[in-house]
Image (cartoon, rainbow, N blue to C red; front, side):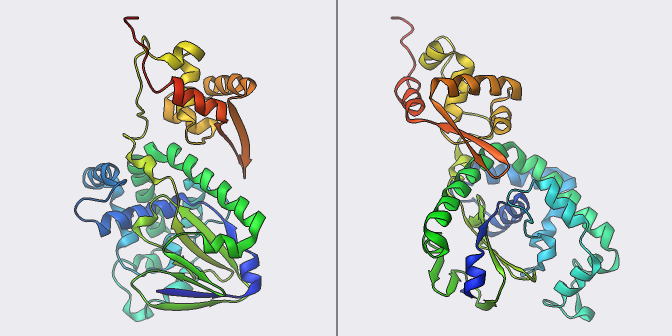
Length: 339
């Protein structure tokens, strides 16, 4: 168990953020933990990711994230904004100051007894950080980016749900209902893990990070002087099991009743919005131009079958009850072409 005692100032500063870089870390940990077949809903994704690691040499440095555990937090820094991009986080990783590396390493290893995989971050910091960031980027592009629009939509929905709970009921209620492996018995937050550790957070900030790949590991990052970061399993990991990054079941144009009713483009968008998504996410998932998706969304908004909500810097679209009814009642079954 990892037990974190939170004082009232820390608890009152509870916030939520997403982290593509932590998704990379936990996805690699998931592959590391399940050397054979990964569990559902990760099974098909894991097969693809293993092929990527085996066949794309540029991804090799990313494996360093699981080389030694526990590892200093500078290797996968906590997000410094609510919804950073991977590029944002890799830029921060590349710019990690030497004093931060030295300070964090001494919490884990004696300076005279560094493991070989960690030594380059001390002796040739810039080259080592660039090599790691390049490897992570290559791994992301091949193993995660095709799924990211759907993952991001699921995470946006998760953040919106949790942010509403935090605003309405406060951090106590939020932590009490976070996940079965995260237990809140005020003032102690317990992560159910094999290791035994205890921390006390005094006048800091608690940052909760929902992750699609959190089944790989629950992470507790304590090296930052002002922030305690804790990950948990986000709802919506099923997006990895639904037939690949851009595939969704479709009837043919000649028998698609929803397309007959609202047009093929709008039918595509309606079906895709069974999970909330951004315009860019929809465009990537459907293989359409963002301008085309925007046009379709404008028409669907005007018809009252779609809604839009702002989540941080993103505008998230989802189905109104009427839109969901259209998809469920009209869109699931093909028309009888012989009728």
